[in-house]
Image 1 (tube, helix red, strand yellow):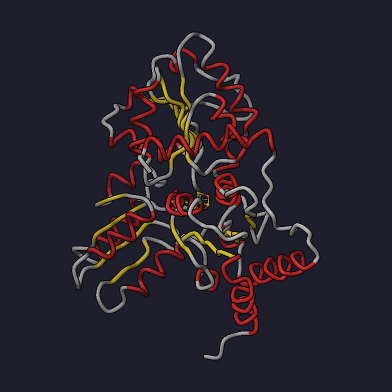
Image 2: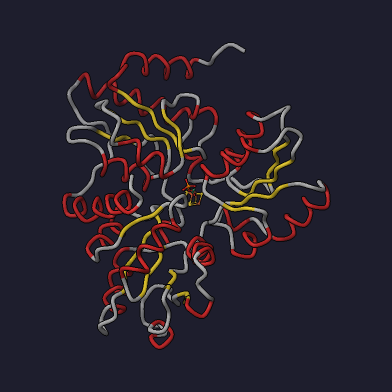
Length: 353
Ligand code: 13P
Ligand code: SF4
């Protein structure tokens, strides 16, 4: 098929910018976007690779918190751009920073040291609040190591915003349900059960990913009935019940590796974002069969399209000519920079990266 005008225009920009532009994309991005990327990865891989990129511009195809992390890790003078600046993550929005500040103040008010551990899927302001309390971030690929570290460093850990990743990781570390407490927070901290809080080792913010909580036990039962011998792998943002019913669970990079390691003829059902599942199905076509537990698409990731990538590159090229900043530039307010960056650096240090 003849390439579209848009495809050619984007590739022309990439050629013209040459070494001065790196296009990065999360695995949940659509194929039409992914095919224009120099680097693709899961949250951890992308964050790690930013510091080794030396082009002046990074065009980041993903959601806002990922581009913010990239901007925090970028070298001085390097600019990170997000083609769709309104691409937020609904889970990240479930833990507003002012509420987190209030909760942390309350939790630490009685001499018990509560350390915050934030999933990297959180806003810049939240990362800064976590950093001010000497906490760290984690991704789904290193949540176990990071939670183990945080538990050693404190009397209690506040894991946010994803209660499911928190509970699934606690299960791996052998923490009993009695040692965990899901905070009862709506818009304020007034309903917190302080007696229960002070007994728990792990406090969980009640956030969740609506894309991964679409997977359920009925879908797993059905796929097992329809495809005897099928292997079921889900992402740890799924509920603990779904993770327990699956054969394995793991981060995006874990799922990619697991698919590659399956023997020819196997059938794999995956519970994660549909763009990744469909791409893996295509890549392994003819060797193994890959199917989604159910089609679940992230609307936030889907906001970045080939068209918005093209528009952001047009704007960047025009702004370079006029020596102006692009409207797609991700800016990090000075007051957040140091504490938010510290949370990422702590993660790299604890994980030996
Ligand atoms: P990972 O890239 O860490 O697997 O996270 C999945 C996700 O939901 C990204 O938004
Ligand atoms: Fe956020 Fe879930 Fe979408 Fe990831 S998949 S960006 S956690 S809503």
